[in-house]
Image 1 (cartoon, rainbow, N blue to C red):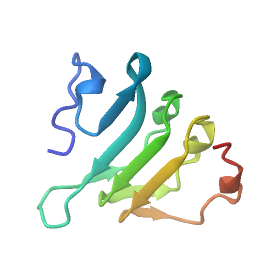
Image 2 (cartoon, rainbow, N blue to C red):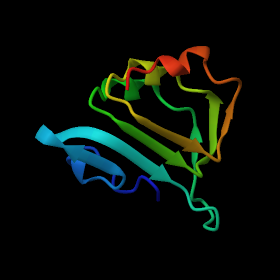
Image 3 (cartoon, one colour):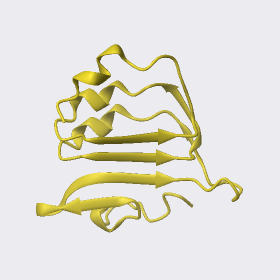
Length: 104
């Protein structure tokens, strides 16, 4: 149910967890599971297609539990990114050494 409002053919700015500012540009993604609610999590990896959101300034992925893979490299392609909160998941490996090179 986390992404139940994310439906093809509907404006993404109306979806839960999507923040849009000027000109209907997605500026923040907020997706959170609830640790006390069964099935309140996502599985899989974070898609590199998120790098297409060039106006994104915040990523907030909390308590998604079954998100796997390495820390997402696509964040280095987001020129406006200021905030990254990715907690309580199954990402593995070291943080990239160039994490301090984010321009914002």
